[in-house]
Image (cartoon, rainbow, N blue to C red; front, side, top):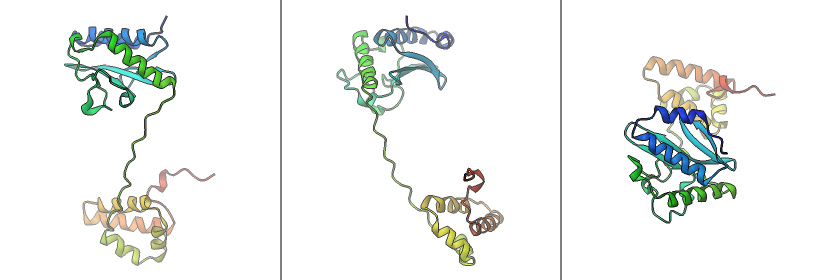
Length: 206
């Protein structure tokens, strides 16, 4: 017998009347397709894991329910049921307002089994490549302060782009001249000591 999480029972019980039959139906189909699935509550809504990876999730909102496949972008979607506008969002079946909005049991079971097979075969989602952040322009106030301290300037130039960015953002975000001057003074002191902007939060070297 599949092990059901009592917290999911409570979640369904608290759901709006329209949502309860939808959640019960989806839960039943998930266990039917994947008897070995592990049910849990994460991020305050029901989630399902199998073969050591996330399978899908369901959630109830004020006026609709949602179901999402964690690897939706890898599913074949032969029946065109996935909400393609945002295929990586939680609501891959679009807004589910009633049981009539769900695909047939046969189709949904097939999608669940396909998603479980991806986990079994250890197929992973490709990581999205993010463009590196552009280096911010140097504030004139910081440039002038660095010119007055060769030691601070040498430290700053030796930092990585991200480390320099932390100091630049800190100075640039100051709202008043008083705050700018205060931060500049601290920045130069820290740089002369070879410290990064967030040195207080760095773990001490062993």
